[in-house]
Each structure stands twice: as structure tokens, then as C-alpha cells.
Image (tube, rainbow, N blue to C red; front, side, top):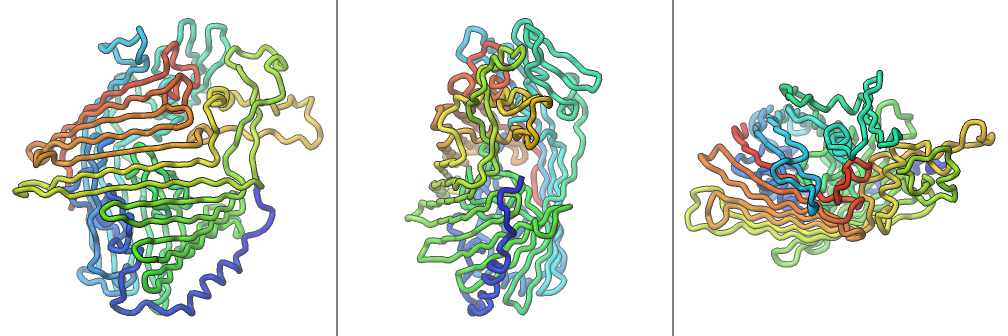
Length: 576
């Protein structure tokens, strides 16, 4: 559904770029631009070293604790040279090849009946064993100072799309159902969950089941993904361009980044350092001292010419504070205005983002005037009838603010990687969220049973200009609340030892549900890292984070809280 009836104001954006031609060009030896890591006042402390320049990883760094390993810390790259100067004066071999490889074997035990008499610590609800080998391969070709080509492949044995959909589908296929409930296989290969009265409660389609492995296990397959593939070039050493598929760093947030509207996937709050997929785009960049003007043009396959997304951005520096102003327009989506800020107070970094959208891309729900009794033989699970609707003319505000502290600890003898301490905290206001979780379970039911929409009418009762109400997706059930907070802390090489610890906490401040994950890892023989961790959810039943499966009636009489114990061994890790 088109939310704006007019075409993009492309002439205005072109005018911004044209005006940049009258700004002074960056002189040789000028201070580094904010795009370079030395001028980036909020470089990700847990990111891969040299991410912006696509450098190889440092094998002595350590990865995210939430995957069974510890956290990565970014290193400064460059020697006071701006990205464009590095491009134009690159020395060394014309083509560089490299990458990294890592392997792990992980086990996970999950319990879904915490704080009840049904909890049996010796009988988990599910058990999984996951062997994994992952490798990143890249090439960086610079045949002449004015041109660069870069590409990166990810080869992995990991399977599953993750997220709420996979969590619920897995529970539907493996969890113990309430007494009297049944699973029914259809000729098409779908799995239907029925309650004790025979009413359909949940359906897992055959396509969703393809990722489910038989209980005996199967050898994992290999997937190959093109993560990045782009070229860098310039005009008159004043305007710099990048075209191709690449990740775009727009926001400054760590757990949430409402300003990052260009990448194809949002940040995973439980794995915020995971690499995300970027679009195919043209980036135009005009640097002027410490200030930068950007223009992004993003096109999808089979899109019409006027459906190209347009996103200008202006960055400027005041003292030690970097500020950016940006906008995003795509004909079928809600337009956005963005502001970000990053600065520091002593050794503590602070950051913030604000986003205003005209309308929303989300499908909302509200209680319907229609009664449950108006449906013929309504199922017991239909507690409240909901309408779905979209908003295309009301502004929404989302904002986030946070702080981080990273400290490299001194050691008497550097026989191993130096110890380090990192703490990151962030608050997120989700302007498109709901004030409570009262409608979350009815919305989950409606997502699986769209025929019970309060605005849905049988074909014989539809008026001439009738439009079917929009359907809910799993994405519309995510980020349900309006206020969130997250905190992570990691201590690497405690007291000059090979032990590292970490703690993560995520809370929906509206319904007070959340996730807490303590972890510990130990490295021995320099090539093996053993990690153990807990993932405990808390809150009332049917809250956002307590247990997503309970929202769909798949948790039986459980109070909803869950616990998972993970143990993994990482080995054979290194860069080349």
C-alpha cells in the first residue's frame, strides 16, 4: 500500500549534492574525517577490528559471549589518514586476499516450566547439539590509486533463520502439548496443532518445516552467502562513490538503532555485533575537513524507476561531538527524518538517536467493535476480537540514548592478550509500540488465524469497494512495547588469567519481562575456548520476552518463564 501519493522530491536532494561542489575540497594532510576510525567518537567496542576498511580480524580478539565466546574490541585503524586519502594513496600489493575461520561444538538444554511443580531439572524440554564451522573470505583489489574492488563471502554450516518465527515453529514441532492436544500432518506436509476440542490452534507450513531436522540428526549442510561486493571510485578526487552490496553504518546505537533504516536486517539485541545484510546501493560522498555529505540511492530488483529509495545525510563535528542529520524516502514506505549524536565525557562515550516517521510501516491492532459471538463456532482461544489497520499520516517519534565505557587493563606481564573491561547501557523509546502487552496474545492468535479479523467480512457480505484488512506478520509482533532498556558488561582475562565473564540483561519496561544471560569462558592450550552460559527469561505469562511459545498456546500450563543452559567448545580459530 502506497503511503505517499507524490513522487520523491529528487530535485531537492540533487541540489544538496550540487551545493557541495562549492564547498572547499579536503586538502592533502587534512584532519581525518568522521568516517575514519580515529574520528569516530562511537566506534563499536565489540566490532571486528577495522570493520569500515574491511580489514582481517585479529585472531587475538574474542567474539561475542552470547555465542559461547567472548566479545571483540575494535582497534583504531589508519594513521591520521582519511578514507579517501587511503584510497588514493594505497600502497602494497594490488590484490589482497584473506579471511578468518572458526569452529565450535555447542550443546543446549532448555526448560520451559520454571517456578512450577512441573519443573524437572533432569528432564529438559528440548536438547540440541550444534556443530558449526564458519569462514569469511575476502579480496581487496586496488589496481590503481583511483579504484578499489572489494568482495566478501561467508561460508557456514549454520542453519535456521532465527527470530520469533523460528522459536515458535520449533516449539510447535517439538514441545509437549497440553493434555488432549494433537499434531496432525496434512497431505501438503503442513503440521496442524489442534486443541482438545479439535479446533485448529497453530499451523506450521511445510516451508517452515524444511529447517527442522529429524531427531537422529543429519550432517549439516553448507551455505555460501555474498556478504559484500562493491567498488570504490571517485571524480576529480573530490567526489567519492561506492556502488554495490555493502553494509551501511547510519546509526550510533548498540542494541537498537532506529536511525539505521537502510540495512535489510535490524540489529539482533541478543547478538548486536552480528554482521547484517546491506542493500545494493550507490553511495556518493563529499568530504570537507571533518564534515561529510552523503547521498544514498537504493534500488531493489523489479522495482520501478521512481521507487528508488533516496537517503541524504550530513555529518558535522562540533568540538568532540559528532552530529548527523539525515532523511529517507521510498515511495511505498513511511518517510523518515533522522538525527544522531555521539560524544564523550572523559573515558565515557555517550550516544543518541532520534527518528521521526510520517506514518508507519507496521500493521497495528486494536479491540474491535465486533463481538466474539458474531463468529460462527468461535474457538476458545479467541478471547478478544481485534481489527488490523495501518497509519500513513500521523507522525511517530522513536529515540534512543546510551553510554559505554571501555578500559584496557594494565598487566604486569603481557603473556597473553591484555585484560579489558567493557560496559554498554542503552534505553530505547519505541514510538510505534504499545503501552502494555494486553493485546499481544490475541494478536498472536490473529496472526495465525486472519479469518477472525474484526474487519474481515465473508464474500457474500462484502460491499462493492471492500478492501481486505492487512494481515499481521511475525515482525508486527516484535518490539511490542514502548520502553526498553539493555545492559551488557564483559571482563576479559580476569586478573591476568584465561577466564572471561559477561552479563547481559534486556527488559521490556512496560510489562517488565526480559532476558538475563550470564556467561563464562576459559581458554586453554591457546586454541580451545570452553564457554558456558544461562539464558533465563522472566515476566508474567504471555508477556513479550517470557516465552514466545506461550503466546501461541504451545507452552501448556507453564508460567511462561524459560531457562536454557549452553555449553560450547570453540576451536581452530584464526585469521589468514
